[in-house]
Amino acid sequence: MMKWIKENDVILRVTSLLIAVLLWAYAMSNDQSDVKQSFRDLPIQLEGVNILKDQDLVIMSGANGTVDVELMGKREQVSTAMSDPLTTIKRVVSVANITEPGTYELGIQAEPVGLDGTSVSAKQPATVTIVVDRMSSTSVPVEVELTGQLSAGLELAEYYPSPDAIVVRGPETV
Image (cartoon, rainbow, N blue to C red; front, side):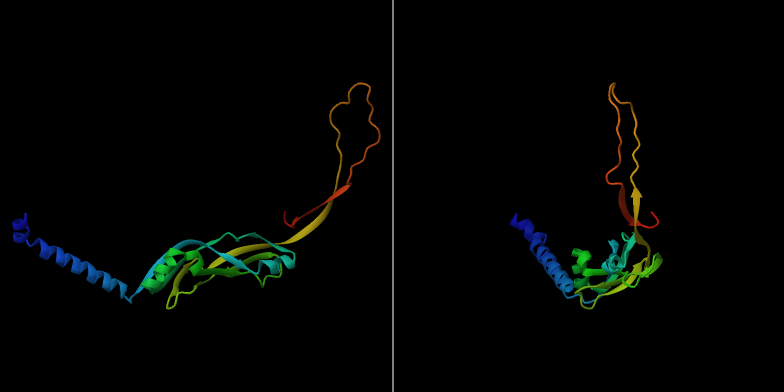
């Protein structure tokens, strides 16, 4: 066995392979080149929703939008984002300036959080459509409709609903 190992330079080959792997690992750990990484279907976050509520406004659609973001930066920083993109990539749409019901095309702000030297090189879509409606209340009278037959020997006296009306609250268009 030892003769075969010496004749085929097994020790030299294994040593060369080990050195090559160590050099590769060293080069990768010191790699300072920029890389790009795409993150798909990241949910957007809405800022200013409480301001809408204070103005009796409600978001009807667009709150569940997603965005694709491409980060560019050092390999180590981008790898950090890959492990937890929901906390390392901010994706915000501000609805704080909306004061009236309607349809709004709002820009999506995307930026890395805590990833020095990293930037957003692309995002798709760049905007999201938000539909806002005014909250409204209305009083609806309660009407009683009797159906069926009374059992023999029973008679229905005077009746009235209680309460005589209920308040319904929701978006004006609904």
